[in-house]
Structure formats: structure tokens, C-alpha cells
Length: 285
Image 1 (cartoon, rainbow, N blue to C red):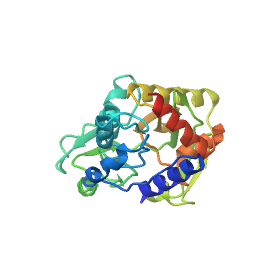
Image 2 (cartoon, helix red, strand yellow):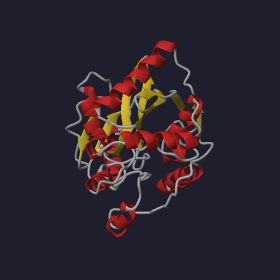
Image 3 (cartoon, rainbow, N blue to C red):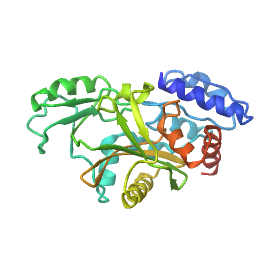
């Protein structure tokens, strides 16, 4: 499980930093059982991915109980976890993003008002590319929507942009080195993300200096537009000299194959120092 791997890595770093760290495995059904224990800690480092981790739920509980935690607050986390909400906010500010249609059923054929040779179908509010599919024909959309609806109550159908996978981590108020991802399968899906050797990473990304600076500035602007705090990671597709915003991660992964630590290392942060920086910035907010 990705959250457990992230939590183990963070816990190990905290031990090396000299903190007295305790580990908790929880979900929305067990939070009340451990809340008393959480209150006894000076800081809670959230290592949860997906629902109840990135969607603002745990942030709300910790805030109401005056427990300091890492990263963005409830409202920002909630807005970023909903891909459609995040896209609308940034598109209104002139940021390019793939055209999309949001649906809660597979009866959508009459409503999609954009033409695309391929479509991306994915849950509106999920992480780690679960329920994600590329559809080659319009007639295949309904089956892909049914799969995505197994993971969320609403689904995004996006135009497929066959560009380069680009991601930009943000730490504090500065962008870190840009990474380009080259999945061996050609699709950056769950397997490509979390299986060692399934993707090639280029850091810093091989972009012209003006494009490199542009996407860093764009990522930082999106981080600010969505009122993120401390850190995030912004994903793009680069196609025909344009960057298209895909989504933003308010709790980027911290596993051995994760992108954020890779970029931070290139910037000069060891994993231990990265975790220390996140904790310090979070305590200052």
C-alpha cells in the first residue's frame, strides 16, 4: 500500500532527525479511536494518499483539535483533490488544461462537446491513477466510465493530449527542479508510478531554458491560485510548445520511487532534510 510505504519512509526520516515518532495506521472509521493519542503529539505528519488523506477530511479533524500537521489546509486540500474544481480555478486564470466533461453516469454521449481521437477517463477525486483508462474509440467510453465509477461518484472524461509527462514540485514558495517522466508502457498509470524500473525519470527535464522557467513559474502560480501551503507537486503535459495542467498533489508521495524526493535531491536536499524542511514550514503556517 502506497500510504504505508510513504509513512514508513517519513517515520524513518523522523527517527534520524531525533524525533520521538509514533506510527498510526488509520482511516475514517478509526480516527476517533486514536484521536486522544494524536493530541499527545506536537505534530502529525499526514502520509495518507487518496480519500481521507488528500481530500481535506483528516485536515479538518486535526485543525478542529488544534493539532499541527503538514501541508495544505482543509479547503485547499478539498479543492485540489477534486480534479474538476482545480481545473476550473486555474483555467479561469488563463492556464491551459485538457478539455473535459464531468459525469456521474455512463449516459454521456450527447453531452461531450469536444472531439478527440482518444479520451482519458478517470475518477474525479482519486489519486495514484486508480480507475484510470485511455479510450481509443468513443463507443468504449461507457465501459471505462463504469470502471472509474467503482472508485468515485463522479468521473472526468478528458481529451487525450499525447505529450511529454512533466511534473514540478513546489517547496515553500519556490519551484524545485522539473522532472520529465518516460513510462516504458507509454502510459503513466499505477504500475508505472509505483513499480521500480517501469519509468525513466529525467531531472532536470530536457527543456529549453525559457520553457523550463515558464513551467516552474506556472506551477508556482497554480500552487498559489489553489491556496496550497508548504508543498505540492503540479503535473503537466507538454505538447506543441504548450504546457497543459493535469492536476496538483497536495500530499506528494514519499516512497523510494516518488518524484518529489527525487527533485529535492537534485536541488540538494537529502530525504531527511526534506522532511525536516516540510515540518518546519508547516509549523510556521
